[in-house]
Length: 186
Image (tube, rainbow, N blue to C red; front, side, top):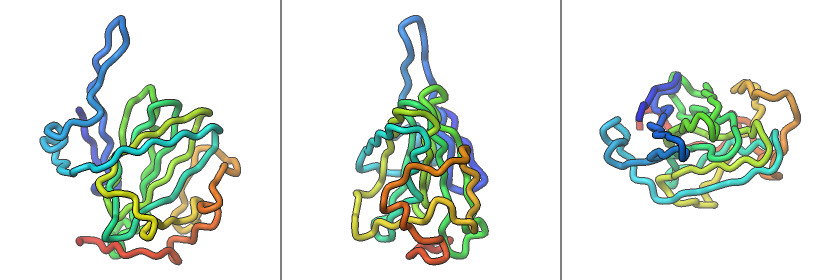
């Protein structure tokens, strides 16, 4: 397994080792021991999976407030997505900065997104399945979001279309107006 840092400290690209032969392939998507060896000591509590039927579906930017903040380990198991993390920790030198990467069933990469970051993705193909682990259970009272096209963040989404959004995501506030109890260094 290779683990690489991104421009956002704490956000990491995880590349599992894939073993293939004439039958297909095998990989470990998560190993507690190997993650700890790589400096990632997180206890995941839940696995989630989403399906998006249409190319151009956008989910996010989502996060949960403290004390129910979540770290996510995201991977795309069918199709392809552009996955994004945004630093929303007040006082961070990278506050409002974003990192994006293509995750796909072909490249098998995963993105580790720590607490204090908003997360979202856009589907690049039809019929996309995304799976992710979280280290805290879903807490609707702590569920928050930021609008996907906030100009202060300036995410360069890969498709110039009006995305397919949920009603909740259409109404999400700007980062400047979003409820946020994350502080850098805590």
